[in-house]
Length: 336
Ligand code: NCD
Image (cartoon, rainbow, N blue to C red; front, side):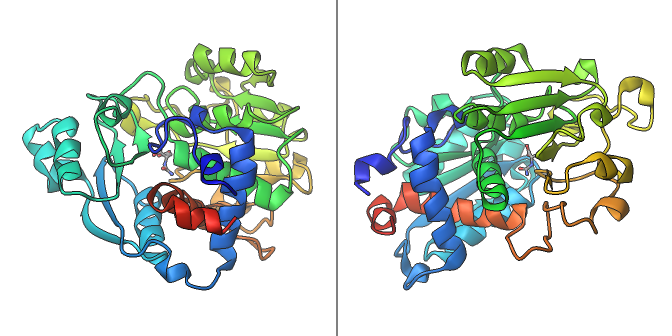
Protein backbone atom coordinates (compact mmCIF):
# COMPACT_ATOMS: atom_id res chain seq x y z
CA UNK A 1 0.00 0.00 0.00
CA UNK A 2 1.17 3.52 -0.74
CA UNK A 3 1.73 5.77 2.31
CA UNK A 4 -0.91 8.25 1.10
CA UNK A 5 -3.60 5.55 1.18
CA UNK A 6 -2.86 4.91 4.85
CA UNK A 7 -3.55 8.54 5.72
CA UNK A 8 -7.09 9.59 6.57
CA UNK A 9 -8.74 12.97 6.70
CA UNK A 10 -7.53 14.98 9.70
CA UNK A 11 -4.26 13.04 9.68
CA UNK A 12 -2.45 12.36 11.99
CA UNK A 13 -5.08 12.98 14.68
CA UNK A 14 -7.90 10.54 15.47
CA UNK A 15 -10.75 12.62 16.81
CA UNK A 16 -14.04 11.70 15.20
CA UNK A 17 -15.31 8.52 13.54
CA UNK A 18 -16.38 10.61 10.54
CA UNK A 19 -12.73 10.88 9.51
CA UNK A 20 -12.48 7.39 8.07
CA UNK A 21 -13.53 6.12 4.67
CA UNK A 22 -14.77 2.68 3.79
CA UNK A 23 -11.66 1.89 1.67
CA UNK A 24 -9.43 2.87 4.61
CA UNK A 25 -11.44 0.67 6.99
CA UNK A 26 -11.35 -2.30 4.63
CA UNK A 27 -7.86 -1.95 3.16
CA UNK A 28 -5.90 -0.55 6.11
CA UNK A 29 -7.71 -1.06 9.44
CA UNK A 30 -9.02 -4.61 8.93
CA UNK A 31 -5.83 -6.15 7.49
CA UNK A 32 -3.55 -4.33 9.93
CA UNK A 33 -5.68 -5.39 12.91
CA UNK A 34 -5.67 -8.95 11.61
CA UNK A 35 -1.87 -8.84 11.24
CA UNK A 36 -1.63 -7.72 14.85
CA UNK A 37 -3.88 -10.61 15.85
CA UNK A 38 -1.99 -13.29 13.99
CA UNK A 39 1.52 -11.88 14.53
CA UNK A 40 4.51 -11.42 12.19
CA UNK A 41 8.29 -11.33 12.43
CA UNK A 42 9.62 -8.39 14.45
CA UNK A 43 6.16 -7.35 15.69
CA UNK A 44 7.78 -6.44 19.00
CA UNK A 45 10.06 -3.93 17.25
CA UNK A 46 7.56 -2.31 14.88
CA UNK A 47 7.60 1.06 16.65
CA UNK A 48 11.31 1.16 17.48
CA UNK A 49 10.87 2.72 20.91
CA UNK A 50 8.42 5.50 19.98
CA UNK A 51 6.63 7.03 22.96
CA UNK A 52 2.99 7.42 23.95
CA UNK A 53 1.72 9.68 26.74
CA UNK A 54 -1.78 9.14 28.16
CA UNK A 55 -4.10 11.44 30.06
CA UNK A 56 -7.41 9.98 31.18
CA UNK A 57 -9.72 12.44 32.81
CA UNK A 58 -12.46 9.93 33.54
CA UNK A 59 -12.64 6.29 34.53
CA UNK A 60 -11.42 3.64 32.11
CA UNK A 61 -10.29 0.03 32.14
CA UNK A 62 -10.28 -1.32 28.60
CA UNK A 63 -9.50 1.79 26.62
CA UNK A 64 -6.47 2.78 28.67
CA UNK A 65 -5.23 -0.77 29.26
CA UNK A 66 -5.52 -1.73 25.61
CA UNK A 67 -3.78 1.42 24.35
CA UNK A 68 -0.92 0.98 26.81
CA UNK A 69 -0.54 -2.75 26.22
CA UNK A 70 -0.87 -2.24 22.46
CA UNK A 71 1.94 0.33 22.44
CA UNK A 72 4.29 -1.94 24.36
CA UNK A 73 3.42 -5.10 22.40
CA UNK A 74 4.64 -3.48 19.17
CA UNK A 75 7.82 -1.98 20.54
CA UNK A 76 6.75 1.41 21.85
CA UNK A 77 7.04 2.82 25.35
CA UNK A 78 4.61 4.56 27.70
CA UNK A 79 6.80 6.84 29.83
CA UNK A 80 3.86 8.84 31.20
CA UNK A 81 0.28 7.88 31.93
CA UNK A 82 -2.13 9.76 34.12
CA UNK A 83 -5.16 7.64 34.99
CA UNK A 84 -7.92 9.43 36.88
CA UNK A 85 -6.18 12.68 35.96
CA UNK A 86 -8.16 14.62 38.56
CA UNK A 87 -6.31 12.68 41.24
CA UNK A 88 -2.97 12.17 39.56
CA UNK A 89 -2.28 15.39 37.65
CA UNK A 90 -2.68 19.16 37.85
CA UNK A 91 -6.17 18.76 36.35
CA UNK A 92 -7.07 18.17 40.01
CA UNK A 93 -5.76 21.70 40.68
CA UNK A 94 -8.15 22.99 38.02
CA UNK A 95 -5.56 23.14 35.29
CA UNK A 96 -7.24 23.06 31.89
CA UNK A 97 -6.89 19.93 29.79
CA UNK A 98 -5.45 22.25 27.14
CA UNK A 99 -2.46 23.17 29.33
CA UNK A 100 -1.95 19.53 30.27
CA UNK A 101 -1.99 18.36 26.67
CA UNK A 102 0.23 21.20 25.45
CA UNK A 103 2.72 20.55 28.24
CA UNK A 104 2.98 16.87 27.34
CA UNK A 105 3.47 17.70 23.67
CA UNK A 106 6.47 19.85 24.69
CA UNK A 107 8.16 16.70 26.00
CA UNK A 108 8.36 15.40 22.46
CA UNK A 109 6.40 12.13 22.55
CA UNK A 110 5.09 10.51 19.39
CA UNK A 111 1.39 10.19 20.26
CA UNK A 112 -0.94 11.50 22.95
CA UNK A 113 -4.00 9.48 23.99
CA UNK A 114 -6.57 11.58 25.80
CA UNK A 115 -9.90 10.86 27.44
CA UNK A 116 -11.80 13.96 28.43
CA UNK A 117 -14.95 13.30 30.43
CA UNK A 118 -14.85 16.73 32.04
CA UNK A 119 -15.97 19.11 29.34
CA UNK A 120 -13.91 22.22 28.64
CA UNK A 121 -11.71 22.30 25.56
CA UNK A 122 -12.82 19.98 22.75
CA UNK A 123 -9.91 17.86 21.58
CA UNK A 124 -10.49 19.05 18.01
CA UNK A 125 -9.58 22.57 19.08
CA UNK A 126 -6.48 21.36 20.94
CA UNK A 127 -5.33 19.19 18.06
CA UNK A 128 -5.22 22.13 15.68
CA UNK A 129 -2.18 23.47 17.57
CA UNK A 130 -0.31 20.21 18.14
CA UNK A 131 2.47 18.64 16.13
CA UNK A 132 2.11 15.34 18.00
CA UNK A 133 -0.79 13.10 16.89
CA UNK A 134 -3.62 13.07 19.41
CA UNK A 135 -6.06 10.18 19.77
CA UNK A 136 -9.47 10.82 21.27
CA UNK A 137 -10.06 8.02 23.78
CA UNK A 138 -13.55 9.32 24.64
CA UNK A 139 -14.53 12.98 24.54
CA UNK A 140 -17.39 14.58 26.41
CA UNK A 141 -16.41 18.19 25.74
CA UNK A 142 -18.35 18.81 22.57
CA UNK A 143 -21.90 18.31 21.43
CA UNK A 144 -20.80 15.60 19.03
CA UNK A 145 -19.54 13.21 21.73
CA UNK A 146 -17.13 10.77 20.12
CA UNK A 147 -15.16 7.63 20.88
CA UNK A 148 -13.68 6.80 17.47
CA UNK A 149 -11.22 4.04 18.45
CA UNK A 150 -14.11 2.17 20.11
CA UNK A 151 -16.19 2.34 16.92
CA UNK A 152 -13.25 1.10 14.87
CA UNK A 153 -12.74 -1.85 17.18
CA UNK A 154 -16.48 -2.51 17.10
CA UNK A 155 -16.61 -2.64 13.32
CA UNK A 156 -13.50 -4.87 13.23
CA UNK A 157 -15.20 -7.19 15.75
CA UNK A 158 -18.38 -7.35 13.67
CA UNK A 159 -16.41 -8.06 10.51
CA UNK A 160 -14.21 -10.65 12.24
CA UNK A 161 -17.27 -12.55 13.47
CA UNK A 162 -19.80 -12.11 10.67
CA UNK A 163 -17.48 -11.55 7.69
CA UNK A 164 -19.51 -8.63 6.27
CA UNK A 165 -20.90 -5.26 7.27
CA UNK A 166 -23.08 -4.53 4.22
CA UNK A 167 -26.69 -5.54 4.70
CA UNK A 168 -26.49 -6.13 8.45
CA UNK A 169 -29.22 -5.21 10.91
CA UNK A 170 -27.77 -3.73 14.08
CA UNK A 171 -29.78 -3.16 17.26
CA UNK A 172 -28.28 -0.40 19.40
CA UNK A 173 -29.78 -0.52 22.84
CA UNK A 174 -29.77 1.53 26.03
CA UNK A 175 -28.65 5.08 26.67
CA UNK A 176 -28.35 6.29 23.10
CA UNK A 177 -28.62 9.93 24.13
CA UNK A 178 -25.33 10.23 25.99
CA UNK A 179 -23.50 7.14 24.78
CA UNK A 180 -20.58 8.24 22.65
CA UNK A 181 -19.79 4.73 21.40
CA UNK A 182 -23.15 4.43 19.62
CA UNK A 183 -22.73 7.86 18.04
CA UNK A 184 -19.31 6.92 16.67
CA UNK A 185 -20.52 3.50 15.55
CA UNK A 186 -23.41 5.09 13.62
CA UNK A 187 -20.89 7.18 11.69
CA UNK A 188 -18.79 4.12 10.85
CA UNK A 189 -21.78 1.96 9.84
CA UNK A 190 -23.07 4.73 7.59
CA UNK A 191 -20.08 4.11 5.31
CA UNK A 192 -21.45 0.68 4.38
CA UNK A 193 -24.39 -0.36 2.18
CA UNK A 194 -27.80 -1.70 3.16
CA UNK A 195 -27.30 -1.39 6.92
CA UNK A 196 -30.44 -1.07 9.06
CA UNK A 197 -30.21 0.20 12.63
CA UNK A 198 -32.82 -0.52 15.30
CA UNK A 199 -32.50 2.20 17.94
CA UNK A 200 -33.95 0.80 21.16
CA UNK A 201 -34.26 3.07 24.20
CA UNK A 202 -36.82 4.83 26.38
CA UNK A 203 -37.89 7.96 24.45
CA UNK A 204 -35.95 10.30 26.81
CA UNK A 205 -32.76 8.40 25.97
CA UNK A 206 -33.20 8.50 22.20
CA UNK A 207 -30.20 9.18 20.01
CA UNK A 208 -29.62 12.81 18.94
CA UNK A 209 -31.34 14.26 15.88
CA UNK A 210 -27.91 15.06 14.42
CA UNK A 211 -27.16 11.32 14.21
CA UNK A 212 -30.58 10.55 12.73
CA UNK A 213 -29.98 13.20 10.07
CA UNK A 214 -26.54 11.77 9.39
CA UNK A 215 -28.00 8.29 8.94
CA UNK A 216 -30.73 9.59 6.64
CA UNK A 217 -28.32 11.55 4.50
CA UNK A 218 -26.06 8.51 4.16
CA UNK A 219 -28.84 6.14 3.12
CA UNK A 220 -28.89 4.15 6.37
CA UNK A 221 -32.41 3.10 7.31
CA UNK A 222 -33.32 3.09 10.99
CA UNK A 223 -36.33 2.65 13.21
CA UNK A 224 -36.89 3.59 16.85
CA UNK A 225 -38.30 1.22 19.45
CA UNK A 226 -38.86 1.03 23.17
CA UNK A 227 -39.12 -2.76 23.35
CA UNK A 228 -36.16 -4.90 22.29
CA UNK A 229 -38.39 -7.96 22.03
CA UNK A 230 -40.12 -6.41 18.98
CA UNK A 231 -36.94 -6.53 16.90
CA UNK A 232 -34.78 -9.20 18.57
CA UNK A 233 -35.57 -11.74 15.84
CA UNK A 234 -34.33 -9.33 13.16
CA UNK A 235 -30.95 -8.24 14.50
CA UNK A 236 -27.61 -9.63 13.36
CA UNK A 237 -25.78 -7.57 15.95
CA UNK A 238 -26.96 -6.55 19.42
CA UNK A 239 -24.96 -3.56 20.68
CA UNK A 240 -25.98 -3.09 24.29
CA UNK A 241 -24.92 -0.03 26.36
CA UNK A 242 -25.17 1.02 29.98
CA UNK A 243 -26.73 4.21 31.38
CA UNK A 244 -24.04 6.90 31.04
CA UNK A 245 -24.29 8.27 34.57
CA UNK A 246 -20.76 9.68 34.42
CA UNK A 247 -21.72 11.68 31.30
CA UNK A 248 -24.80 13.23 32.83
CA UNK A 249 -27.57 10.64 32.34
CA UNK A 250 -30.15 10.11 35.04
CA UNK A 251 -30.62 6.48 35.93
CA UNK A 252 -33.82 4.61 35.00
CA UNK A 253 -35.16 1.41 36.39
CA UNK A 254 -34.72 -1.22 33.70
CA UNK A 255 -37.10 -3.51 35.55
CA UNK A 256 -39.91 -0.96 35.05
CA UNK A 257 -41.32 -2.15 31.71
CA UNK A 258 -43.49 0.95 31.34
CA UNK A 259 -40.20 2.70 30.37
CA UNK A 260 -39.55 0.09 27.70
CA UNK A 261 -37.69 -3.19 27.52
CA UNK A 262 -33.95 -2.79 27.03
CA UNK A 263 -32.41 -5.74 28.84
CA UNK A 264 -30.72 -8.70 27.14
CA UNK A 265 -31.83 -11.84 28.91
CA UNK A 266 -32.85 -15.41 28.15
CA UNK A 267 -36.14 -14.23 26.61
CA UNK A 268 -34.24 -12.09 24.11
CA UNK A 269 -31.79 -14.91 23.36
CA UNK A 270 -34.71 -17.21 22.58
CA UNK A 271 -35.98 -14.71 20.01
CA UNK A 272 -32.55 -13.84 18.53
CA UNK A 273 -31.13 -15.34 15.33
CA UNK A 274 -28.90 -18.35 15.84
CA UNK A 275 -25.92 -16.63 14.21
CA UNK A 276 -26.32 -13.16 15.72
CA UNK A 277 -23.68 -11.63 18.02
CA UNK A 278 -24.08 -9.79 21.30
CA UNK A 279 -21.68 -6.92 21.90
CA UNK A 280 -21.17 -4.29 24.60
CA UNK A 281 -18.46 -1.61 24.79
CA UNK A 282 -18.38 -2.27 28.55
CA UNK A 283 -18.50 -1.64 31.46
CA UNK A 284 -21.69 -3.65 31.91
CA UNK A 285 -24.09 -2.94 34.76
CA UNK A 286 -27.54 -4.55 34.86
CA UNK A 287 -28.43 -4.31 31.16
CA UNK A 288 -27.35 -7.88 30.40
CA UNK A 289 -28.49 -10.72 32.65
CA UNK A 290 -24.99 -12.15 32.78
CA UNK A 291 -25.79 -15.54 34.25
CA UNK A 292 -28.20 -16.17 31.34
CA UNK A 293 -26.25 -14.54 28.50
CA UNK A 294 -22.56 -15.19 29.23
CA UNK A 295 -22.80 -18.96 28.58
CA UNK A 296 -24.43 -18.36 25.17
CA UNK A 297 -22.01 -18.65 22.21
CA UNK A 298 -23.50 -15.47 20.71
CA UNK A 299 -22.12 -13.36 23.59
CA UNK A 300 -18.71 -12.10 22.46
CA UNK A 301 -18.05 -9.02 24.63
CA UNK A 302 -15.40 -10.54 26.94
CA UNK A 303 -15.00 -14.18 26.00
CA UNK A 304 -15.86 -16.31 22.99
CA UNK A 305 -16.45 -19.97 22.42
CA UNK A 306 -15.67 -20.13 18.71
CA UNK A 307 -11.91 -19.48 18.68
CA UNK A 308 -12.35 -15.96 17.29
CA UNK A 309 -11.20 -13.03 19.43
CA UNK A 310 -13.69 -11.39 21.77
CA UNK A 311 -14.66 -7.74 21.38
CA UNK A 312 -12.17 -6.71 24.10
CA UNK A 313 -9.35 -8.63 22.38
CA UNK A 314 -10.29 -7.10 19.03
CA UNK A 315 -9.86 -3.77 20.83
CA UNK A 316 -6.25 -4.59 21.56
CA UNK A 317 -5.50 -5.53 17.93
CA UNK A 318 -7.32 -2.51 16.54
CA UNK A 319 -5.42 -0.18 18.85
CA UNK A 320 -2.11 -1.81 17.87
CA UNK A 321 -3.09 -1.11 14.26
CA UNK A 322 -4.07 2.50 14.98
CA UNK A 323 -0.88 3.23 16.92
CA UNK A 324 1.28 1.71 14.18
CA UNK A 325 -0.60 3.80 11.62
CA UNK A 326 -0.12 7.17 13.32
CA UNK A 327 3.29 6.60 14.95
CA UNK A 328 5.15 4.55 12.34
CA UNK A 329 3.17 4.82 9.10
CA UNK A 330 6.10 3.77 6.88
CA UNK A 331 6.45 0.53 8.84
CA UNK A 332 2.68 -0.04 8.90
CA UNK A 333 2.58 0.37 5.11
CA UNK A 334 5.10 -2.43 4.67
CA UNK A 335 2.66 -4.80 6.38
CA UNK A 336 -0.05 -4.19 3.78
C1 NCD B 1 -17.38 3.53 26.90
C2 NCD B 1 -17.11 5.01 27.14
O1 NCD B 1 -16.27 5.37 27.97
O2 NCD B 1 -17.71 5.80 26.44
N1 NCD B 1 -16.43 2.73 27.55
C3 NCD B 1 -15.37 2.28 26.85
O3 NCD B 1 -14.50 3.03 26.45
N2 NCD B 1 -15.36 0.99 26.51
C4 NCD B 1 -18.75 3.12 27.22
C5 NCD B 1 -19.22 3.29 28.62
O4 NCD B 1 -18.52 3.82 29.47
O5 NCD B 1 -20.36 2.88 28.86
